[in-house]
Image (cartoon, rainbow, N blue to C red; front, side):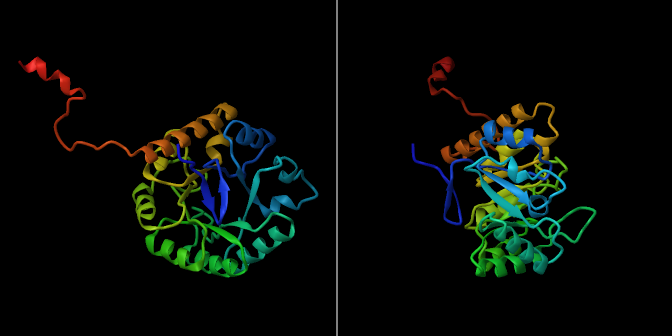
Length: 256
């Protein structure tokens, strides 16, 4: 079987599950690495440099790639500042851009996201922008130097599932970058569905953090993402628009 890797900015990963750690706990990190097989974990920079509380950096195992995000940024300039700080803290040059001016729905500001992406890409960052799934914005992000696009499936933290499914499908069909579905995925079946559509990866946080059995849910997401990817690579069977089709042509004798 041909090797199937997730490639982001020239870096290669076996896992197509990305853990968002906004609701992190030691159990979440352990389950994500052990049971979900996550190789990329997001990191809010403001949580990595505090002396009053324990740092998430103490709990991320060696070999896991940190993906600092610019959570809290309200414009491109603030996002750039946070990204530079993350690199100074030793978090590397991969960065997830999150820019939100809307405090009620936490929807990303696409225009400011494009600006931040262009500025950071010119500085050598591997930029992974979180965005509302809009084709024109996605094309602008490609031109700005993004390494992937990360459209939301539903409002962040909502667990509402694939509210923007058809717009995500358009991005998958039209954008020549990894499309990583981020925010709102609440069930493993939903993660499987977007992978069947051709998404490159899925990011989840709340769905795991709020599960009754976190390790089991982490494993369920791992298996669902793998199943969806395999189904996409295999080529899903055609869907009949009307009538039915016999699964075994040898049943013709029943009509004799």
